[in-house]
Length: 266
Ligand code: SF4
Image 1 (cartoon, rainbow, N blue to C red):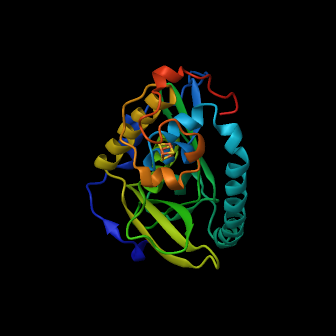
Image 2 (cartoon, helix red, strand yellow):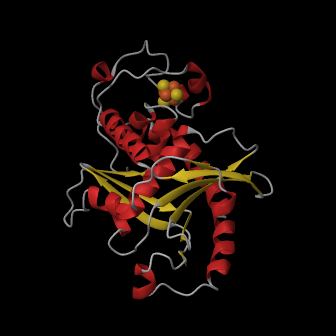
């Protein structure tokens, strides 16, 4: 719970202020691309994963991706059942409790959020969201691992920060809260016991980092190469490694490869 969090201090941005600064979701379909937050976040591992999510390598990898999703789903289903039992005891949100920022509220797991960043629409489902008596929303993403890492990985941070921005974008008119706090909760891969968690306020600095990453992700997704340096150690463990044209940075550039048509499914 919140009191066990390792808080990394930074000036928070209020939930309402953040919500107001984010572009409103257009009523008519004005976005050109729809991307899952979990796919965008892999930009934190390597910027060129963006290219793979928009171009032709995905079908070859689909069995691997589906397998990873199935494992993730089994873990999440168990957590979902436990969570639903817990929140069944809590009062349901009403008009009054929604607006009273100091009334604790729990939501069902997998709360859907969207974040519009023209011409992209990002969609995500948050593992766990709650408003606690301190008036803050706690946005939690669960990860399974063998060991608690020394610090969260960049892709995990981008994912949970995108959820924070999505929470504000989707719900700031409907719910009242002081600040958003992000949490990454690590569970043992085998027995699912909690190993520890990291977290902090969703601050202006983090929001700026997220916006910068969205812009760079979108450039590569649309076929514009910004010349990012590639870490060869990451290429060795990357699921895109076999067919990745960016692997050694001595391969053809995007310009030479031509712009491939993004897959309809994505
Ligand atoms: S193979 Fe290397 S360059 Fe290509 S996406 Fe993976 S980490 Fe990035």
